[in-house]
Amino acid sequence: MFTGIIQALGSIKTKVAYDKGAVFSFTATNFDFSSIAIGDSVAVNGVCLTAIEVGSDFFKADVSQETLDCSIFSELEQGANVNLEKALRLNQGIDGHLVSGHVDGTANVSEQFNEGESTRFKINVPDNLVKYIARKGSVCINGVSLTVNSIAGNIFDLNIVPHTLNVTTLGELQTGDQVNLEVDIIARHLEQLLNNK
Image (cartoon, rainbow, N blue to C red):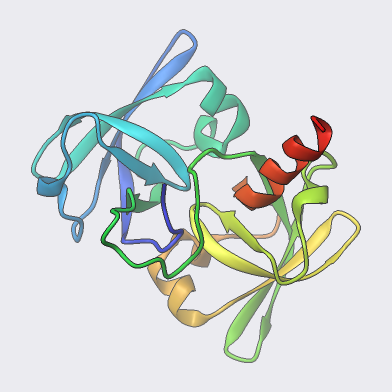
């Protein structure tokens, strides 16, 4: 589990594609790699990945075809910036919301504009995921815990403050960009319970 509070802005050090998957390595200058062991989970752009190799300034992870298909990882290349967060510890506070790291799919930035000191993003969500988005509910975009301002049809609004734009990849987003989307975990489980009454 994760919180959606990004701990470091990193980048893709290497990417090696193979049949039905890829191996990525990720690096960062202000991330404590010494506390990561092989087998540990790290969220990269909101995707829970398992460390298969760890160095002093990087970790390496397998990315399955399933993850490539339902996330933006297939589009990311060496040098691209990514959001990093280590797995939640039981003695750690939760500043964001509970995030599983199991991305539900991708959405795209349909519009963005300045609103005071912040930036308003309009996100176009696929038909199969829109039912999980609620006004003032939580979503996770590229691993960042955010609050939905409003929703109309397939478009929901986010207001991103300058700090979040500066310390995550959200500050790089342009209209038309694809993002990883994880909906609220409670909404997903409630649907499963109601469908199996």
